[in-house]
Length: 245
Image 1 (cartoon, helix red, strand yellow):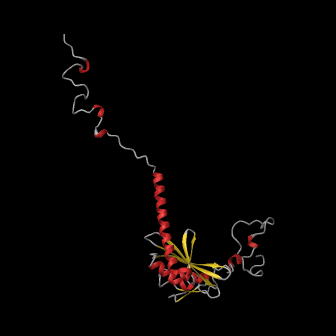
Image 2: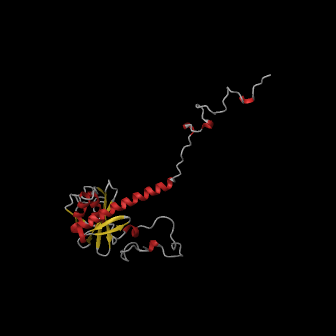
Image 3: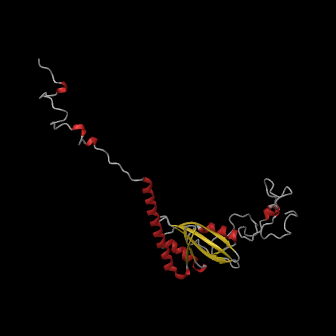
């Protein structure tokens, strides 16, 4: 009696699993569908850090080039420094328009951001302009200094038209006069207002004429430290205001 070998063993018509069969790949080896995918073990956070560092280095190089060009053009008439992370260029009022024009035409800082004043006691005002280069992303602070006894500065409207309203505000808040401005009149304050409210010697009338709102301060209940309400603002005469001021 002839039996069939289990699982086809010793049967010449049966080929063991994959052996000698050119069309069969044992256990799927060399099958491109089963080729393991190469894993990327790089750290995404490290890659982002390296990219940020490279961008920072590039920005610092570009900013260094801007600083060098300003120094080469104006020589000892400009003082270059860093202020709040921005490159700052200080010049005398006589070079103010030349500095603004050079920043716009030669350095690509065509975007005018803002202009304002700073009371710099005891005898001067700073005028500060912030400009931006949209291509390189670099920023510049441009500053000049005018004396309080003659606070005159040429208008920047001919270089940056956006300086118009900024100069009007600086004029009414600090009293800086921008010569040849096309319409140097108050912008924010009501008609008839006297004085320049952002000067440090300006008397804060509201703090003397009105009581402070809100809960009582320490000392107002009859004990504790003196109340701020009874302390006059700097520059206010001792006999000015309500009797209990």
